[in-house]
Image (cartoon, rainbow, N blue to C red; front, side, top):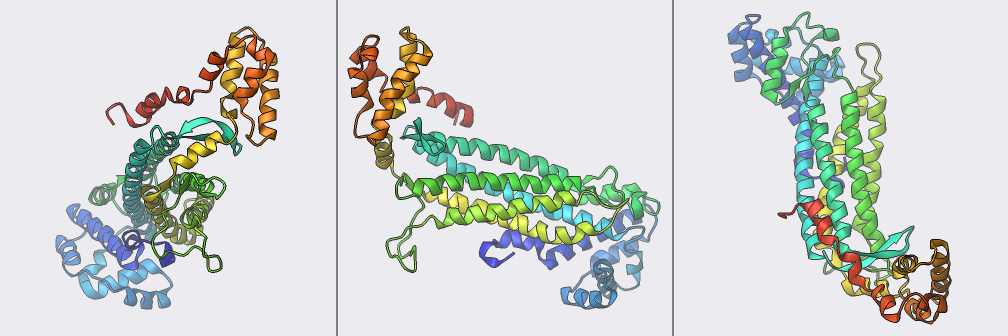
Length: 435
């Protein structure tokens, strides 16, 4: 992953030094278990922990000759451990090391992503309560619908990311499995107790049946979950991008002192952060497909999945980590313009209250079809005037309406607060009554 979209903590999980350290711990813990079972001398297990070390450059040098990364690693460790190293990797196969290591890396990456989501939820909740009753227009198809509050927009995002957190917790559990079962997964040359020991030491669960590799449906679910989370990032990012358009300008990314928006036009304040998030979301989603294609391996195993995972493991987790942190910053500093929201609410001459008049006419005895026709013929006049004519005035002057509703009854249907009477109920559902 390129440094521009990377954060050090997540990158560190995927560094060669970290990977080989996990490999070493898998091998050393396995040797401990083998020693307890009497398969290898305890002195050998102790020597591996005491003298075992590796050098990334040396491993790479060996691999250039042997063309096998696990053999290169074992060879380098043996150079440091000495004769006792012959007891390493007893009854194991390369996939035992590679798959268990990947499980550790994805579990650790998940922990960072879960912390990212927690931070994002805090930021969204704070801004949602800040604008709990800030009126704004709700849009469907991009067209004015009925009034909502900006707090409700953010409450929706909060609920969505809470669901994403639950999905990621489940995906982490699904992926955090250990396989130390030997060639074709039969435990023919290694006792299942070794697998249990390594799993416990590394904070994993035992893979029930590994066929030499951990089944890739687990990985498919994991990367699909990352794709769903990325889509939620994009959903909120796209909302902000739309709200920042000049014609709307109800919210805006923070524009720092000295920041420049365009090399050609000095006036520009562009939504570059949320546009960036849209692009990064596309990348995270794209990693889900190859993860699904990895499920169908030949027989007990092949390595067609290997090259894929060496790329998508780091790239997907690093990119999503960066995206979640960036989105948190956007929300935390988001500039929100209630006066512009009110201006946009008012600009279409009260059309946003048309449904309340429709319902009032049906309650007053007019059929729904006739009520719709009466309100629509007046609403279209307002629409065609671009809001210069007020819907309330037209309705008061319409004899079909005035025959059923008084001016006072009509005016009550244009009360903005009516739309917000259940905001507290929705907030209680999303945040809890003690929030």
